[in-house]
Length: 224
Image 1: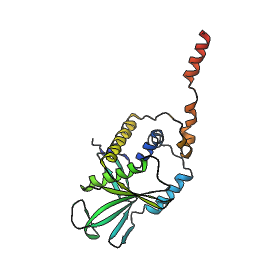
Image 2: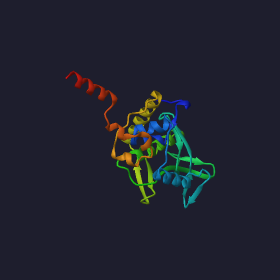
Image 3: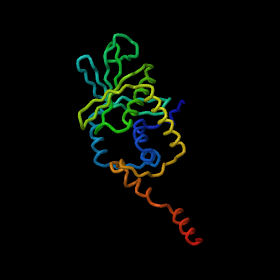
Image 4: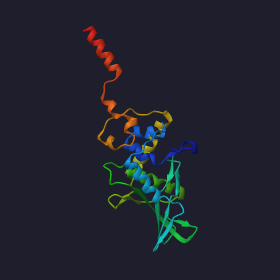
């Protein structure tokens, strides 16, 4: 699959889509958004991280931030939190940097406000970033990391075939949903309580009978 520039979707949305396709559609199709404490803390964290002018050299490791990335095979574009450039002895799976001589292997790091999720929503976002960098530079990246601010923990992620396939499947589903302009129906779950869109989504209505149910019930009673 190859997507044109006008078909590209925001990479950050892939975590929303895996968490809840309805949440993603409300944000990216209906253009609705509302902050709560969790999202506000997340924005604050990224304000401190996403500085494109920031470069740090710590020993032999260079850290660059807010690098613009894109993949036409995923149809996604976005901005990285941080990429560590690790020195490499040769050009295999490495890149060059205009300010630093030699070869460097990119090591993406995505910053998250909270802690490890029960599913792979954070991991697929990181995998999508890896695929973007691979496509842009013609390299292979086998490992990346997630940093969880709340627990001050770095989780190393092996970018294997299973994760790559899942990421491609999710991106294709996102594009199909976006092209259809379709917002999935609400589905009440325990996770809804932490969602900033809970008032807009109104998942509690999913538990209530529909109008068609009441009409059918009334007709059935009248003919009984």
